[in-house]
Structures are given as C-alpha cells and as structure tokens.
Amino acid sequence: MDIETKIDLIKRPPTEEILVESELRELLETNPHPGHYIGFEISGLLHLGNLVISGFKINDFLKAGIRCQVFLADWHSYINNKFGGDWDKILQATKYYAKAFQFFCPGVKIMVGSELYHNNDEYWRNLLKFAKHMTLSRTLRCLTIMGRSETEKLDLSQYFYPPMQAVDIKMIGADIPHGGMDQRKAHVLAREIFPKMGWKKPVAVHHHLLMGLAEPVKLETRDKLEQVIASKMSKSKPWTAIFIHDSEEQIQAKLRRAWCPEKQTEMNPVLEIAKYIIFHERDAFTVERPSKYGGTITFESYAELEKAYRTGQLHPQDLKSAVAKELAKILEPIRRYFETDREARESLEVVKKAEITR
Image 1 (cartoon, rainbow, N blue to C red):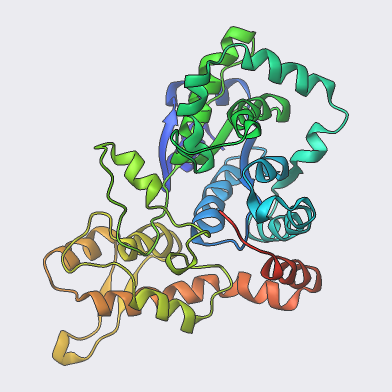
Image 2: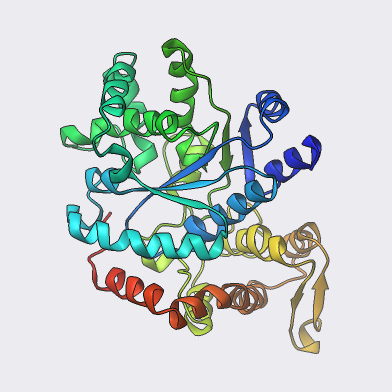
C-alpha cells in the first residue's frame, strides 16, 4: 500500500486531528509499520463512543499496516475510582474489554497496564524523570483526560495520571498515540516533553467524540472543545448512552427521548450517529415514512441528510426511528457474539453485576 493511501485511511472520519500530518508522512516514509496505541479505562459497559467510534479508527490503522495496540489501563482505572476503586472488579472487567476489542478489531494486540508495569524499573524511573519536566499547574490543566476538572477535590494518586499516560506511550513503543479529542492534552504533553528527554516525538491522532443523547452541556467557557468533552457519550450517564448490547427496542426507546431539535444540525446527537456510524458502514440511508408525510426517502450521503433536516424536509421522529433501526442492524453482530460466545458472555455478566461509578 502506498503512503498516500495509508494517510487517507488515517485521516478518514472519525479522525478530527493529526499532530502533525507532515510528521506522519515522514514516519511512514521511514517505517512502513509503525506502532499505534489507544488506552481505555476499565469502567463498565462499552457504548458507541468508546468501542464503535474508536474501533472504526483502529480498523483504519490496521488496514494501513499499522501495528495496533489497545491498552487496558487497569491502574489508571483504579486511580480514577472506576468500579468504586475495587481492584478485583477492574481485573475481571478487563476480560470483557479484551473480548470486545478482539472481536470488533481483528488483529489488534491487547496490553494490560499492570502487565506493563510489573517488575519494570525502567518505567518508574522514566515516570519520575518525565514528571521533573511538569509543574503542578500543568498537571491540573491535563485533568480533563480523566474526566476531571481543576476545581475537583482529588486524592494525590490522581495527579500521577497525566505523566503516567504520557510515559505509557514511550514504554509501549507507540509511534502514534491515538484517542478521542479529550485525550489531546496528554498527547500534547508527550510531544512537548519527549524531545527534552531525548525521546522521539510521537505523532498524535485524535478522533471525534460522539455526543451523548442529552441536550449539550452549557458551559461558561466559550471553548467549543470543552463543551464537546462535557457532552460526550458516557457510561456514567447511562440514559444518554447507547450500549453495544442494547436491543433494537432499547435503542428505539433511547432515541425517542434523544435531544434532536427540529432543523438544528449542530450538536445534534441523532445526526451524529447517522454521520459517524451509519454512513461509515452504509453507502445509503433510507428513512421510511407514510406517503402523507413525504413517503420513503433515501439519502446517498450525509450532506444530503443534513440538508434535508436543516430545511425541515425531515421530521425529528422520522429521523430517530430510521437511525435506531439501522443502528440496531450495525450492532447486531457484536451483540450476538456476546450472547453466543461462552467466555464473552461470562465476561459481560461480570461487568453487569459490578457497580459502575464515575
């Protein structure tokens, strides 16, 4: 595969940002199979945002010949009080995440944080050396990577999270750290400090953060990215999330209640699902409706769909119903996998029984 094709795959939606494209090109010219990594906290059932959107991008990297790794950050999860800080539950749920990503992203390598850190003196030496280049104020500004804010009351361990995430990149051997736009600050931190330590600056790739189904969070800041992060789909707000195990009936019920103002296309979660998931998987999208409401209509592109919605040619309820129906079809293979594979089913049951905390 030529370099241009690889770059096109990496730039393909849901990618929103590459830091920076010229460095990515140089990397691919010198290394046809660079290493990639994306990290996940272990924190409950997987949903459209953390498995499907992330998985689409991982699969693009795999197609481009990139060596992809999913890093299951068990210690980061413990630091961030996932599952109430219950270490045993975190370890049990790790198996569920591994099963899901191995199914959705065939060929991806799974790495667990505790395995990387075990008896690894070099990691801890590098962590302290890296932290020498950070100030407390810079650490505070990075806390959004773990879904926290500068004003929250945190325990001391949580301040270690940003430098740990940055050093993970080095120790995993990732040339391309990848994550949602909410992970940007950690990757920028690594890009700034790695050269000071004599390490190669990584090329960061950030994908779109899928909105939750609720009305977008209103913030005092005018920073659009902060609003996007605050409004993203989250398992800690289950009524705003579509989980990969939801039935068509559950998806229909959630989407009926979803925020979807008539003619509004910006920050519209139902349109986002159509744009980033349905049109990622389908060449066309059909909305069935009675003839008295305009009859069945097929859209050949997202741009066509958005225009029809913006001009009032498509009613919110018709959009919601069609999106729910098509989304259920897209999720059906992974839902069936967790129903029929014994180990996958058992790992899912463990997570369902566990307490899900923010």
